[in-house]
Amino acid sequence: MKKNLMFLALAAVGLASCNGGFKKGENGLLYNKYTDKSGPKINEGDFVMVNLVVKNDADSVLFSSYEDGHPQPLLVPKPQYHGDLFDGIKLLAEGDSATIKLSADSIFKKSPKPPTFKGKYVIYDVKIEKLIPKGKMTDQVFQSTVTTYMTGLNTASKNAEPAKITKYIADNKLNVTKTDSGLYYVITQKGNGPVIMPGDTAVVNYSGTTLNGKMFDSNVKADAIKGKLPNVAQRSFAPIRFPVGRKAVIAGWDQGLLLLNKGAKATFVIPSSLAYGERGNGPIGSYTPLAFTVELVDIVHPKLTAPKPTVALPPVKSVPLKK
Image (cartoon, rainbow, N blue to C red):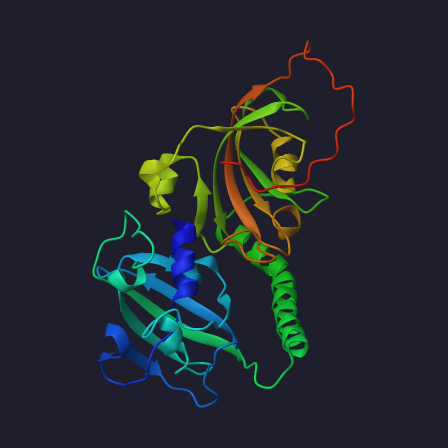
């Protein structure tokens, strides 16, 4: 569902201009422009950074870039049909904000409507945070300009990490310990027996949030409901299993779980260098620190009689958490 909503968000961004209520545009497009800044309007091929909230008729939020903590980058494509949001976005300038209502039938004309979507319209609240016009720049110069801008944003995010982590720890009154690698942890419930060892299989319950409190994943049903994760009814809430110390999960997990024994619960505050780094992962942006509550439900030791490989295996790269 998340991917479908993101597709909707990026495949339909734009509005027409007006003041004082909705007006009708091409093909049934309804729009209301709230902020009208001076400056060049957006054209096909331009680069924009867009903050976007997608809702249905009942004002249920389907997607919000504000919850993700960063606007969405977009190269403005050719409209897919008359009166879509890409037609509308060409009426906006940097700093403009607006709302548009599009017929759900028009949006889902060539693809099935998500089963959980209800309503006649898809409603978009849009703010153009940044515009880089393509103009007469060559493709190479334009790409370099956009890359320089994005690099600056990433650098700013990276530099802001320490302050974000410090504030989160203080706001949540966490009595954390910091490891040499930069992982912050606090054991909230002691377990029993020896700590888990590299090569053991961890059986884990967990919930993950960004430091603004937005939950992005959980295998604990109560947390998933409270965090308003999508498709709760279709989710499996069984503990996940993976070998510890084998780079099957992000480094912050590999390091943090080695501090726990069976039955222990802990909170990890993980800097991006031990999570998803510069690339990010889906809704998790570049240089985004994360917080996890984890419970080490069980430890499964490898069978001593298991045959050893006769050929050296290549190292496995770090991958996102498996679901």
